Amino acid sequence: MDQFINSIKPQKVYLDSADKAMAIANIAFYYWYENAKREPRETFMPAKALEQAFYTTLCDFSHLAGVLKTDSNSRIFVQVEADNLNMPIYTDTSCDIDFDTIRKSGFDTKLLNSTFDHARDVPAPASFFRSTIKLAEAHVIRLKNNSGICLFVSVVHCLVDGQGYTTFVKRWAEISRWILSRNATTNGSFPEKHYIHDRSFYSEFWDIGTNRIDQSTRNAIDKGGNALTRWIAWLSPETRGKLIKLLVLQDKRINCYFRIQKENIDSLRATAQDNVSEGMRISTNDVLTAAIGISCLQSMRAVNIERQSRLIPSTLQFIFGKDEEPNDASLLVVASLRPRVNRQDVYDYTGNMTVARAAVIPMNQLKVEPTPKTLASITKQIRTMVSDMDAQAVGQHCHFVNKKSDGYVRLMMGMLGYKYKLAVSNHLGFDHYGVDFGMGAPILVRPAFLSFPNSVLIMPCHPDVGGCEIAMTLTLDVAEKVIRNTTWMSLVDKFDFNV
Image (cartoon, rainbow, N blue to C red):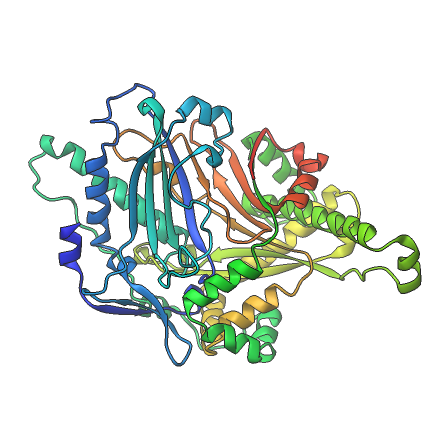
């Protein structure tokens, strides 16, 4: 730790629109490691080496020891001061549950009787009376009889996207491996790497034009500003976090994990491909997003209809009319700029380089049982939208939103305006299973609660298993509908859920 503290230099990192849009969430994952050979505690991911590697890694990510602030112009920034560090949390604890019990439970994190709040999914102080948001935390939970380890790592989303988060965790693992093996090497120092945290790097890709701005974004930025959006942007990060936890996260949520084998993915893709326009090539992500969107949005609609029938007797519905159904639902898709530019250094940049765009799904496609043509229609819409999000379009979007101090709030409000909405992100391209601390790859990697209900993350499965795992954070009643959706469940090989 002393090495890290001594390396701190005062700095101020101003966040841009892509970062600020994520200021309401954390990125957090559980990494499960099995000690199958029952290595002794001194050699299986030893505590001293892990902790030393963590603080050595922070030397490359010193802004994670800063404080989130908002200036008088509603700009969010991280202030790092050597004499006022906001140190990331690091703990190493034990629990009385062994790995086999955890595995049989479907890796239910409720069984971990650890001392940390692993459901902290929104950037907010640990308690109502604490005033500082921790920007990163890592918890090592050692399972009974040294049978394995659960590693929980969380970083505030406004400082990293999926690529930046994975870069941080993999760097920690790389340094840990070096520490464990350094007695066998003549090299006196670990391999140095250069990471880019300065947001001016991202703005190099921005475009001041507006011809590629989609209409929904244009409407949200040009017409969506009001006293409420300005007030939310003006709030301190701490107050905003407390407000979100108080107002947004009241519904009972459940995490569902659905494993889909490669054969079923290929079959689903072939079905959609046979029904889209000739010459259009669709991706695995396109068709999975479409299938996820159909099942979840249909389930939300079914839950709302049942709620209305319980709350409003049929006689009153006849007199006053039924709850008016919207014309459209929103399927929010997240795309990254990195693969859209031909520069390797974009993968050294740790800030957010993603843009969310909404596919508007007509409700008449969600009122009936899904058919191959319905799947193809929504898949085609997603493919067309994603294809249009090239480097110029993404650059124009970021510049356009960043012009307004409350632009990211306006955009968020516009996206939240739909009655039925779902956000889908994809981590298939991230090397989560490459996070090897010297004892092999994790058995399983899963996200903690996604920040808001109706959020989905497409994850890779372990390389030995193949396929993918769909992690959904849903309200309990919607989750129950999804699990009973025979069309969706016909794709699923295995599923777990954590309440």
